Length: 147
Image (cartoon, rainbow, N blue to C red):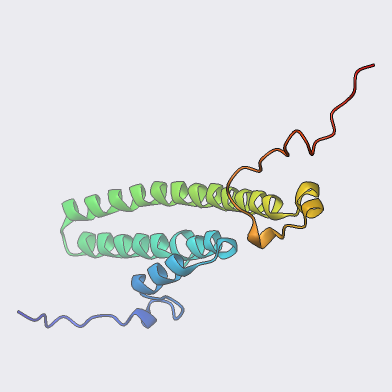
């Protein structure tokens, strides 16, 4: 059965709001350097999902209170309060995520720099193997001589 209740256009929710599917696609396709910022924008930013949902719960609570549905109004207000706490936790997770991603990208960049051993052998970084580098055979190594 189809609803006769008009549906709000997602563009009417503040102009820049995008549907959740768009954020999922953007997050899934994000590069490492942009993921934490996209997550913040989508979830915890002032116009992010948490803030929008919080506003919806507050509006619904107020509507219920105005129309005599006090029990539902209280439940919605309590959910809005819990959502505020969740939003703070998500913000902290996003901050930690940003630091972790930033740290890992620096570690990866350091790992891909050419080491003196690699440059001495003439091996390019793009063609390195994950296999451990074998030690040179005893005939090639110069060993210290005892006197």
